[in-house]
Image 1: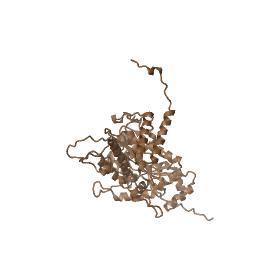
Image 2: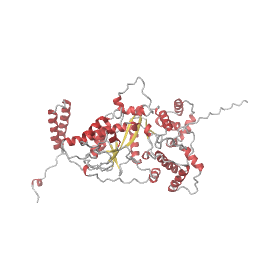
Image 3: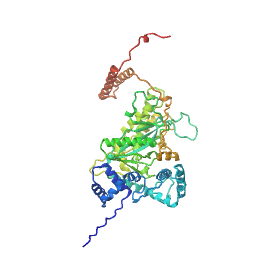
Image 4: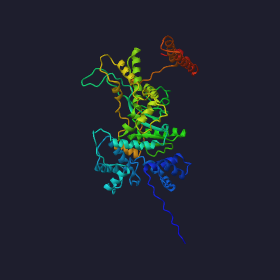
Length: 529
């Protein structure tokens, strides 16, 4: 009898990123067979992958979807599970924060910090933080010894280029409308540029550095800009009327420091994924490695998260490439014009409140053009360049500094004569370094790894400038009458302006007519001593 030797199945090494892509593809297309998944992934990457290999990977999809995003080595092939995973996650979060601050870290420092987290997490006393364990930890998270080059604040160009290539490979599987970026910025929302920095004493009012944190999210072609995510210090500032629905304008949250936290970011992620699922879209969300972007036990059905390599966000993050700057140009121009109008109307100067800042935030974000957003994404090098057949935008539309001349004029008009003033660029940069996230302390890291109860936020009202101003429907109707008379007499307005004002006037009158009236009591006609 002749025996037939069964041919041995060839071995295919699959990297972390490909394993994650297989699991994500299967989640996005649950009806597709393993054979189809194997053929599709093989076609994308130019190698043959077996159905049984796909099946092995899918059996551990939870591990690959969660762990693959943590490593900075996309080419790694093997991953042995850590014996004490929570301790290693805490150590990596601590390491990532220190690396972003360019703090030199040695093997001995890592081992000592690991022991600190081990004690806090009650690891067994017999666990040995050996050199062998340390080498495996560094391999799991793609940590290598690097020599610092050039200036202390310089950027590792090799890391930037490697990260750009990795992101480009991931992004190419998505249409630009399905590639999103999310980032936060601090904003001194009521600050006026009346003085500049000086060596000696300068007369004038103290700078008002009341701030909020604003998170912006948009896709690569600018066709979908999510509502600004605004974080203030009060749950309901006194400038919010009782029936004022702030959530119609922005997504408003609060905490004591007006910072983005891991819990707030979790809320954003779940809502973002819910919106994508409702639209039957599968999207990619690019994030930096901010401490607040840590999340635990979140299942996202239609959103794939991709973290930018540490210390590369100034080069690879689209929102940092000019989108946020353009938003601030529009916001601060509106702020200056508001202050100038107040002065021209003979009113006593008073700073704006949170409610007005929210209106300005919404208008400024709406003013950022889609062409500016698309250009900033392309500028990072992670989005393919437009083909020759696609129309090109004008330079004015693409320039994130477009409008800065108007801001400079407003500053000059606002500032008193002979006063040393800030330039528009300096005014824009005043809040660039404002902290927007929680400080990465050991307690913060441990709370992310093993969450505890949520602290109650501070609901204290804000300062006196935010006191509520009540305006009745009768007052609004009279004010609109004045607006109509002004439009009729001033040559700068046209018929469209008059029609808009007239429509609003009629709407106010209609609301006033059908509003429920409170019945007058007989005691109202008598004075009570």
